[in-house]
Every structure is written in structure tokens, then in C-alpha cells.
Length: 88
Image (cartoon, rainbow, N blue to C red):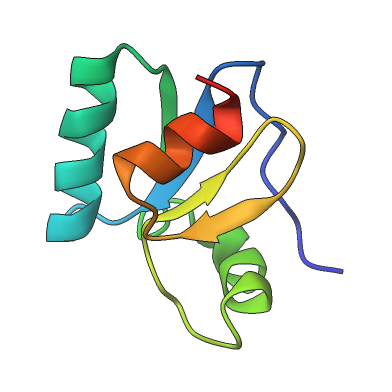
């Protein structure tokens, strides 16, 4: 079983990303504007979660991969999808 990030606190998310990912930067900016707390993990500097990303993305290293407080994950979600998952 791949190592999953620790589940975030209610109302916040963990975002697995890279420094060069435009989709990651856009989502991070949108989440910040919406006041949603984010714990960002850059998988290039901390590769310990790469297997987890691959396990929830059909073997692909797709970022951003978001982890919600209930332990579920989403790939490249929109701001509205994040809000919906968080009940906001």
C-alpha cells in the first residue's frame, strides 16, 4: 500500500504538486483567494508520495492531486469541486 499524506484538518486540503506545474499554481492561487487552507507537498523535493499519486491516477504522476479530510483524492479539481468536497 503506497504511503498517503496525512489527512488534512476539516476545511483544508493537502495538494501534491510540482514547482513547474501551471495547474498547481492556478489552483493554489484560487484556493488562497477563497480562504481554503492548503498544505502543499512538492513531489520533486519529497518523492515519498509518488506511489500514492500513481495509485489514485491509474499509474500516472498527475498533479495537482488533492487529498481531502475524508481521505479521498481528486486529480486536478476545480475550485468549485474542492469547495463541494469540503462542504463549503
